[in-house]
Image (cartoon, rainbow over all chains, first blue to last red; front, top):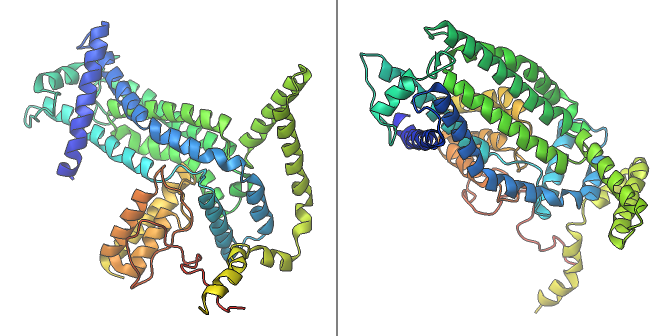
Length: 342
Length: 98
C-alpha cells in the first residue's frame, strides 16, 4: 500500500509546495498556517482543474440527450407502471442501448471518481507524515520538494491557533478542537448540500421512487452522523481539503444542472421554462426568426406524444416495436438471399 | 465461490449499499461496473473476475459510449475492446431465410 501510494504522495507534496511558493510570492507569511491551508485549497484547485477536460467531455457527451428525448419517452411509456425486476432490467438495457447508439450518455462514468479516492488517501498520509515528523521518536523523511525543513515549518504553522495535522481527538490545543469541530460541521453541511442538490433536483421522478431511492434518502440523512463519528479522526488539513472539494463539486454540479439537466427531472422542467421564457421574450421583441419557430414547433410536438402516451398500452404493438433492430436485417434479406445461393 | 471471491463480493455489496447511493447513478453501462464485477467473480472466479472488472472500470470513462456490456460467458473471449452484448446478435444473418 505504501509503495502504491508513494508516487501520489510525491505529487501531492510537490503540488502543495508549489502552491505554498506561489502564496509566499504574493506576500503571505511562509510560516503562517493560512498559507499552508491555502496550499491545500490550491491542491484541490489543481486536481479539479486537471479533471476539467473529463468534465467537459462528459458534458458534450450528454448534449445529444435532448435529441433522443422522444425515443427515451417511448421506452419509459412502454415500461410505465411495471416495477418487477425483469421489466426494470429490460428497460435499463433498452435505455442504455439507446444512449450507446446515439453516442450520448447522461452519466459521469465510474473512472473519474475512482481516480480521486487515492489522491485523498495520499493527502491523508502526507498530513499524517507531518505529525509523525513532529513526534521526536520517529522522524519521517521529506517527500519530493517537501523537504524536512518545509515539513517542520508546515507542522509548526498554526491556523487560528491550530496545527494542520491536528485532529479533534488527538489535538492538544483547544483551538485545534474548535477549528476541527467547525470544519467537521462545514464538511457535513457541504456534503449534504451537494447530495441534496444532485438527488432532489437532477433525478427524474422515476428515479425518486423505489427501494434504491428510499435507501439513498436514508443515507443522505445518516451520512452526517457517519462524518461526526469519523471526522474527529481527520486532520484539520484533510477537513479543509474535503470541504473545498465539496464546494467545487457543488459549483460544478450547479452549472451542469442549470445547463444540462437530466430529462424528466425537476431541474429539466425549470430549464425548459427558462428556455420558453427566453423564446417568448425574443418573439416579443419582434425577432421571430426561423430558428425559434422551429424550436417552438418541436416543443409542441413533444407535448403531443406525452398526452397520447396512455394510448400506447396495447401490448402486441409494443412487442412489434421492440424488433425494429432486426427489421433492417429483414430488409437486407433479398440482397443476402441473392448472394446465398450463388 | 472461494474465500477471496466471497470477500470481494462482500466488499462490492458494501459499496453498493453505502457509497453508491450517495454519489447517484453514474455508470454508463448496463450491468453497472459493480454488478458486472460481482457477476464476473461469480462466473470466472476471483482472479479473472477482478481482471475483467478492472478492464470494465477502465472502459467506463468519459470517452466511451457506454451501453449494454455483459460479462463474457465461460470460454468466450474475455478481454475485448468492443462491448460484449448478449442481446446483440454477433451475426446478423436471419434465422430462417425467406
